[in-house]
Length: 383
Image (cartoon, rainbow, N blue to C red):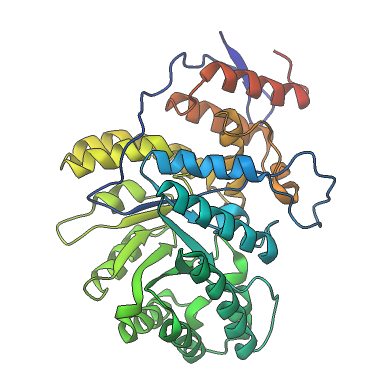
């Protein structure tokens, strides 16, 4: 059995798919690391909506995917950018997602943390930004989930310098009921976040970020760093107050950051752990036993796929995540809210399929092959 896959120039290459998936089994939560998968939403393909309409979500399939992640011991980071916050999923849809997922987590005993942002406004004064954050924080806390304070486009536009970030985040941390995760999302994920923390100079921005944490260490469970810069994450990690965790959001360098060094390690909150969920869980369980080499042997080979999915423009990595969920049988279609399934090219999909199949990520390789051939035929590539 072979499949012909196109390259960037249109030339076809022959690929022989795997016949057996990687053997993985569900298991209990981990002991050595706290690990969240930032999960995608499943669109309703039968809803008569346009890219400008509010998102139509298939709630049954969306929650089933979260149960899949929980069954492997992973926590779910809900309503993050992986779920297309600000790129198809508006605040009303995100609020419903948070409520439904938090209730589902409670019913099955799954761990969940949810994104708190300001996407119900596009701009505003600092007071309006604070109010938007407060509204979302209340929804997350009322749901019983842990809060992740996400970077805000509106705050990036309204802030005149570091002191505005210190004031807004200080205000939110003082009133949060439980310790939160602070999320620093780099401009490669969202260009509107350029200069976050009051400076385009990353050293200066880092100092402000750490000043926020130092002022409220009892209200910060951890930080999520999504800058795709391993050394900067390590440097930040080493400067954190005792008891404040670092959750890597680096989808390029996660194996070495999670494995850590003699001075510490990162936990994980990653979009790539959506398609890698079962494999990532197996790797972390190796780490739980002290088998660092076994962990690296499982996770290092996945970096090529992750770097491919998160290649520039990085914000469109979500398309590859949903594509692989379709091939893996977690949803019956390749449709995304906002029509974002069109954001990557056919050669990009072909390489993603080949890399994921080589890792054994598809529970049913034959189904994945058939679905890949279906997509190829829609683009005029006949087998």
